[in-house]
Image 1 (tube, helix red, strand yellow):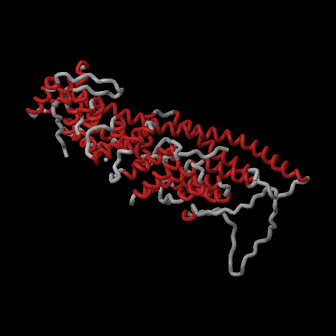
Image 2 (image 1 turned 90 degrees about the vertical axis):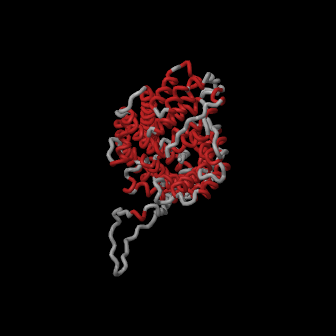
Image 3 (image 1 turned 45 degrees about the vertical axis):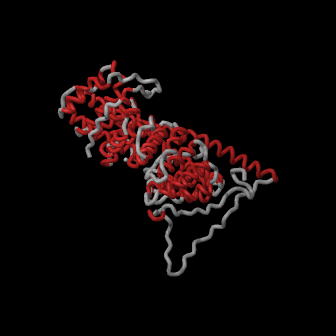
Amino acid sequence: MSRRGLRIFALVGVISLLPSLSAAQSKSTSNTDGQEAPLCEDSMEVFTPFVTGVASGNVPEAMDALAEVLKDPEMEGCHGGAYIRLGGLLEKEGLPYAGALAWSQGMQLDPDSTSAEVVTAFLALEERHGDQALMERTFAENIGFKADKETRSKMAYLGARGSYAQSNYSTALGILSLVQKDSPDMGKGMALKGVILTQQGRYNDAMAALLTAQAMVGDDIELLDTVNLNLGRTYYAAGNYPKAIEFYAKVSRESHWWPEAQFERAWAHFRIQDINGALGILHTHITPFYDDWYFPEAQLLRTYSLFLLCKFPDASTQIEAFQTTWTPVRDELQSTVSAMDANAVFNDARSYIENGESELSEMALRDVPYDKSFIEATESVDVAKKELGVLASRSGSWVDLASGMVQIRHDELIERHGGRIKSQVQGRADELTTMLTDTEIAKLDMLRLETKLYEQASITGQIPDAEKKVKRSERVRRGYVSWPYEGEIWADEVGYYRVNATPECPPGLMAGGQ
């Protein structure tokens, strides 16, 4: 029987930007590999055609001039400045996504030449293209851009998210220290800090950060639910199961994560040997309301709980029910996802969100509508398609350059997020294969432990029987009508079940060795 592992969620006007041709743009900078980048020699001469085009109001001519610089490998040292200038013109031409991509490239190649105005405008473009991951990646690679206090806090939060996504936890923590206490991102920053510290096993520090975040979230119920869920997980990881139960119970019933919080709460009850408490919570997950949710481990935990109460026939029945229920689910997930590439999975998941139709099962895609990174990716893909259509009607060498950047990012988003969901679905199929194999082993373990249990009892010279309850005929009071319980379940009952199961073990003994 497996034990529950820890899972953490991890829960921005047209501006003409023409950076001055100052001496600062001629000095050497470091590229993304940490190597010394070539100097931009004679930058005044290099960018003269660009300046001429801008001065005459011929923006396409100015962008063509920049494209020529970017195509010339001998002008590598000037590429950063060229991208920064191109980004400003693309944004001015109504191509914000292409502009953001150009700015990101230029900021990475030539951070020293990136002005505070460029950083501010770059951040402002997020509302027009929705690609927060692009911001996160850019600031994760360099947080030293010129910026005012408020902008630096925003940069730091996004950069920390980018570093966390790359599993650079220490770097992310260092960047988070730059978020100002009065910043709107401080609450989210503390929540992220708590998640990172939990990943590092620094549970006490993580609890302090998450509790601070809890106090700062205000009326953001979604964030509050996420923080409470992560507090429950942190206390669980630290072995403080009563506190874990307390915070799991704080996740609101309206939250999509409420069933998950209840399931994890059941594990905490199980850990403190409150078997009836675990069974009561787990009853929620076997109601018809959750038939299409992925909770196979809940059924296994319920089975193991019954075993600890020495209810061996019931536990055996549950194992058979598990195999009957989840074998076809495993087979369907495996056969469907193996026939789809990342692009097909991306489109299928999007179709599920938009109209409820998909090749993959609802069980596989149920969490996708709550996956913010996926939602942002679909929005960015739409913006990319729109800009590619606009670019197709334009001409000039700059068009090929801009189209290439947008197309690459478009394809990258689909491949990354479609591939991520494909891996998640494949992981569930593989997990079910392991669980199904384990249930076969569990049958043998059950027989072995049942035998051991009674061997322990036989030390006294006899094997006592489990306590028996006297069965009496049902007596119905006058004026009342009685009928057999047929399993009717009401939605408002979910989450409030209580179980008072009596152990059927010999006196003084439990299957767990108690």
